[in-house]
Length: 292
Image (cartoon, rainbow, N blue to C red; front, side, top):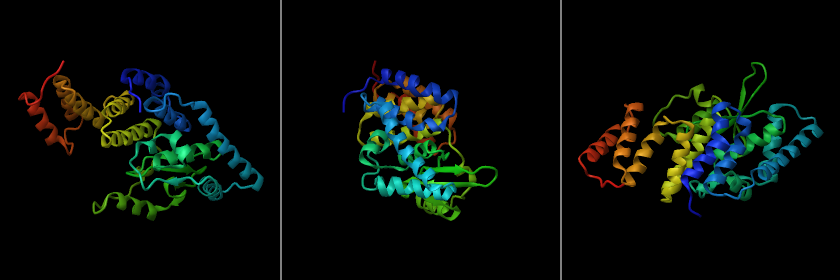
């Protein structure tokens, strides 16, 4: 994978995604944002418009079937989308290589027909929206979901695109939460299934990539992804802390100290506060080599 000019990547990110994300919250554009993310970090020659046209073609096929069969009930529409995506097109969850960064690149997910909850959900939502069936993102803990909000006050239907478009009732949601956080007895609340913003979705995608890049020791892209989070939310606690870690690895100790102190100002009760304080003490004691 070619080297990355972080400053150019950040400017591109601000121009192509951040300005739009922070000025308005249009979750129907998530696929475009996700493709730009992939283009900036890994696929500079990616044709965004052509890739979106490919997805829109899937939407048109679904729309044709729905109209031809006279299908209008939400659960039946979901069944048709599921049949097309998972039976006809053979999209599937990547359970064998879940943490591979390729799973976070929507263009690769389209090519390989396998991905993780967030990328499969973004694809699912774009196809559904394009077929006239509105769906929005759900930032569920540890497992991204999507939902259709029914007209009037008739509730909502939550869908797990990672598991074949399964419709999630309260029992299934609670079971999913307990699998993700065993023995923690976290109460299931409606806050977990509220509509997510475009900014929240992009930050979650970038955090996934950060984890993958760190595992692969691709620190250049790890830093870029972290700065892309901060371009959306300059006070994002995890990104502020991780900027400090990156700066420390680069030997820029004074800047690292500033970032780590800023993290504790934002998150004074953080679980890792003691560890961060210990690093701050070591910096002040001269335990790290300064560069620059």
